[in-house]
Image 1 (cartoon, helix red, strand yellow):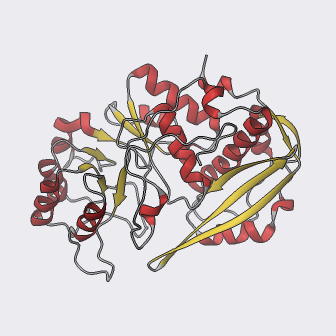
Image 2 (tube, rainbow, N blue to C red; image 1 turned 90 degrees about the vertical axis):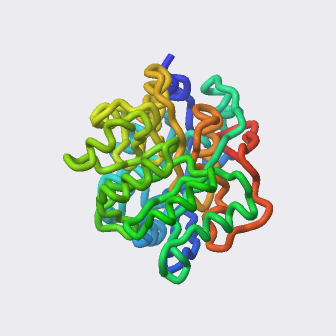
Length: 354
């Protein structure tokens, strides 16, 4: 049976919608998210809207929960269909369809949490999978706090507190051979993210054959995420195609099939998929095709981080999951964060990682 079919007919009663804002100051950028609380039959289900534009959150929160009519009796599947017919956007989103998927995921994950809590079941029970300890890596860009030249210092500071933690690094156009050599000597770089699909954002990277060469030669055992496949880079990438993974362009199984090479591994960020049906179809496809997966985060500030950890524990616990505890996102690195692998911490009911 398809995984989605195991949850599609769960009954769901919604009485009201409550919105709750979250924010974290990250240097010059304020990360905002919105918690989506669906209340019904004495229970509450919660998801997290991880849209990146702060104004989109301000507009939604100002409109309030009464602006979106979701009350009624549904199943998970009929509720998903309801979301096709109701606007979740008081104003058009800044980033179009990408943001629409993020918000859709927030409402569908909240509905799943609520339906499971009303049924007195956990997600693990519903999809008939045993949660397992989650291996995680910490994703970071090495930009100096003062905006100066990139060095390995951020990585060194993290490893001083959390030795042997795997890293997912974002190479930039300022990287040098000396920096790559220093990072390679640490022996903890699991993946490098070339971010070639980002345009007009603070994290854009100009395609540079020298940068690609340094990273591929410097980290020969790493995963290479989202490279720019051009006439110039293809000869370099073709020999390591088995180590190339994809993230930003993956919103469905169809998107994977459009990649230049069939991957051995993909980054599955649940919020990129929007509807639960598309996400679970992706998990099923990976399993049937023998394609590995690792989870990815979106700087969640609430339950959304637990959601991706929970899913990783069920579907891909042993891979380099970019699902580290949220404390690693804070500007000042905390002491006492849980070490990898994360022991499963699921509630007896709902879609909750405590």
